[in-house]
Length: 135
Image (cartoon, rainbow, N blue to C red; front, side, top):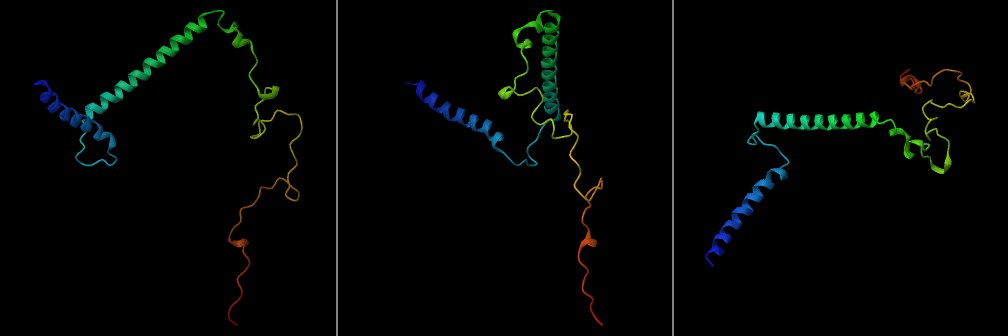
């Protein structure tokens, strides 16, 4: 029975501590009173960079182990052709969009009348002339 009042008194303090921890996450506007220590920020950036470097080293080590295995590329997954929908050829579906077409057909002829002339940007000179005023 004596422990119940102590626990009840501790519960609001714990709730206040939880609200205080959640308060900075809600803030959207940074004020002049939101102080940050430069060293904390630098430590956080250094820790993130170190974690990224550890992950790079791990992936590099995994790749080197894979390449050291002479049978690594002889598994079933490496022997299959690239997957394509509906049994299409190996070229990608957008290969002709950007001039990367490997087809042997010649490119389509340019629009008639222009030859190899580029389209001209319209300017103020393309507007009809203003009517003459005065006499």
